[in-house]
Length: 495
Ligand SMILES: [Zn+2]
Image 1 (tube, rainbow, N blue to C red):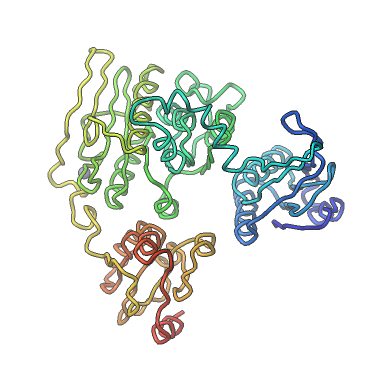
Image 2: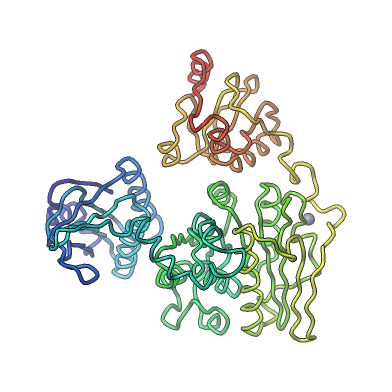
């Protein structure tokens, strides 16, 4: 449970609520108001909050902790409003039968709360002045100093740095390629990085996976990587998913992400991810390494025109069994990260749309435009573009189905649409073959994928809103339209 309160937090009451003879024990974290910050005497503070979003995001973090760790109960209470020095500002309690899981879950919850929940701290000092802590203004000033060598590069500047800070990159696989990629992107100030990897750290990884140290052995890679990356740059939001990238997770992330880097050592994953990206018009960079050589492919600017890893098969091998010298993936990963930064900052690169090989054994560096493999499934019409499922307006004669998350709906209400998650829609949500539906999400990727899947199942009257609510907002001066009463009534009748 996650709660906000304006009253002093009674820790004893909350601790009693999570106590359970089955767990046997609990750990808790208590954050208090400090009397100093950056050398200044703090007298009191005020927490401002965006309440609806804070509650939904806080509850999501608590639910994530319950799903990820072997624990029995989690509770988190955050104060808002005015606080005096010494008062409890936030309290997290975790009940579990195993102390390792309890400590890990408690740390996860407090880290995520600090990173993701929209609560802002306003400090008041002994000298009568005050300032916001960790707000955009302060982090901007920090950023100018931190990135000055980067913004000095021609073509970057503060505009490029801003583009990086607004970008969200998905890194699939945090192994030999994913480590240098994540390290470079987080260091460069990419605003949000999501890591997906179901593996645990092993000692045999350490010679080539620089984010990990000996004491990480046995830990999920995404947790160890996240810990290190947040230490490298605390202004970057780093999310970790300790699983393989399956279709439900892809559908969840697809609309929020600007660029995908496929960094696993699995040819299956590279084929799947590169094909999904092509189908969703998502820019992707895919890499592979083998002993002393490796290569990577950067999708072209018209991303639906690129090839998939299947088309590239024969050009690279996996490092899993064949062995690899550590510096090979470090070099390939660094080059992939460089291409990612240029793509995000909209800088031209001669490697865009090309397969680039670095062969340290033979001393060769080469780059060429690869051809599609005749007969490859990535060339089928359903995979190559929007497949003719797109509508460009919020047509009121269609029944609108809103595939966005609760948090997205709070930010941008679309009251006449029926809320349904993409997973629920594709697993038995009742649709009437005689009705016409318009699927809506934030950017049109989740809705496009779902519309094509429903078309494949024989439902021909299903459409996707091109560009999602963001595009609709741009064309209607930031006010999403309401439907007429009769269309809304129709929608209600099938809910
Ligand atoms: Zn292909």
